Image 1 (spheres, protein in one colour):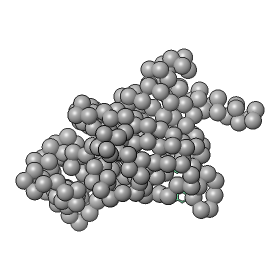
Image 2 (cartoon, rainbow, N blue to C red):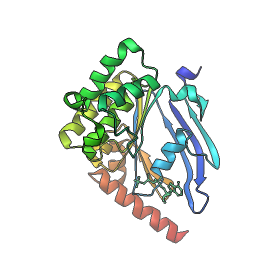
Image 3 (spheres, rainbow, N blue to C red):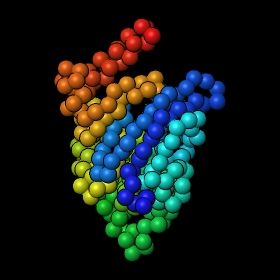
Image 4 (cartoon, helix red, strand yellow):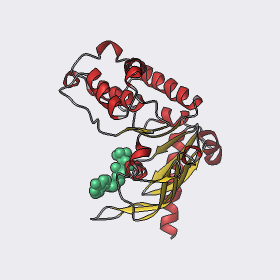
Length: 250
Ligand SMILES: Nc1ncnc2c1ncn2[C@@H]1O[C@H](COP(=O)(O)OP(=O)(O)OP(=O)(O)O)[C@@H](O)[C@H]1O
């Protein structure tokens, strides 16, 4: 049954955009229930493309992607996913509350639970006191936080967050992480992309993507041990140098 299947299985996925170079070369990953998986890598590495491929928003050239056992794209499965894109998809002329109401209804949150869901999601990102302000008057960071709240609104089984902590101050970042931990405890599964190394440290499992390839993966602790370094930044630097050296040899 799909409800018991792994939240995400990606097998040997490759993709090129029409014009050019392959963006994803041969990516495989599995997200287990109750796990927080972090995708890290330099700008242009292919993280967002992978996220969009997982969601069925970008066609792949090769490989297989399943969410809860179902090949994407699939509308029914989308209802179980809270997705936060890299660029905010908000209605600027509406208030934050109206945005949350709109997306809550779109995600079929039961009417009698919607107000409570809005309260909870907006409190997580500290916007509960400015819900009736128009989004056009929000700062960039506030818009990011509202996007996080929208992804949380239907209490999804799977959260897919593309750079959720960009422009968010450390205190609030901690608050968002507390919510992610709470979601995880409730057996929800989460995949995030991030450039913030503090985020990477808090993930259960990391995949480092560079030039469309997963150059290394493992738990943060195992990766630091493997590369004999103390930070994920250094893991990344060492793994990158290794990839370059291998390419020169090859
Ligand atoms: N729609 C598109 N058409 C053509 N090329 C694209 C398209 N979207 C992304 N690319 C290219 O694919 C590559 C990977 O982009 P992607 O957005 O997946 O990287 P990323 O790892 O998410 O980067 P960032 O951390 O900056 O968000 C880049 O070279 C980018 O220019």
